[in-house]
Amino acid sequence: MRLSIGVLMASLCALPATAEVYVAPFAGYSFAGSEFDISSTASTDNGQGKIAESENYGLMLGITTKDPGNVYLLYSHQATDLKGAGNFSPEIITSMDVDYFHVGGSLYFPNGALQPYVTTSLGLTHMRPGDGYSNETRFSMAIGGGFEYQVSQSISLFAEVKGYATFVDADNALFCDHAGCIWKIQSDIMWQGQANIGASFKF
Image (tube, rainbow, N blue to C red):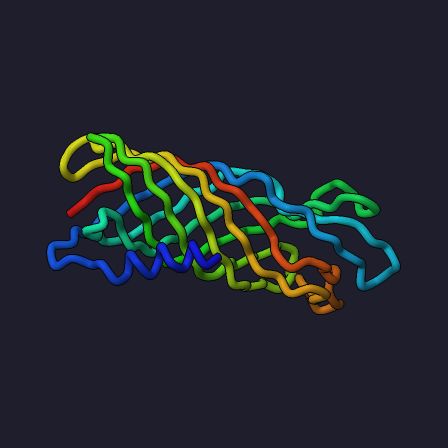
């Protein structure tokens, strides 16, 4: 966590006067969602739940830094399902949209046209289940790495892998409707991975 915050703060403090603005759409796959222990609020049943793997897409808007690197705002969207496990049915419990709203920074290690990089970000995870259940918003952080290939002065392609950690308070009642809550979660962190490809356009 200290490394993530350090990389982000270093990027924020190094904005050059000639910084370039860029926009970077991306798409990918969200995977390896961690299971968390849950208990039904309507019975004594215990089990596990997880967010299902599925495609995601998003957009970054940022400015370059002299490190070399960048500072960016990120939006990522995943349309997925909430699934049960253990004593709960493995079938879909409800549909769910997972959105990440982050501010982050990257540090590049140029090697000609190919530029490996590390990236970190922090912000909010917004979970929106279907079937009339309440939305939930939690603090989250991400760290990852990738490669960017410079096609021209203003266009580049990139591929990256990230890990997101959403901080969920233990023993919290989540996803409630007019009749009550689905369950209580016994977990501190919800993990999720992303593998993305995209293009960056500088102005």
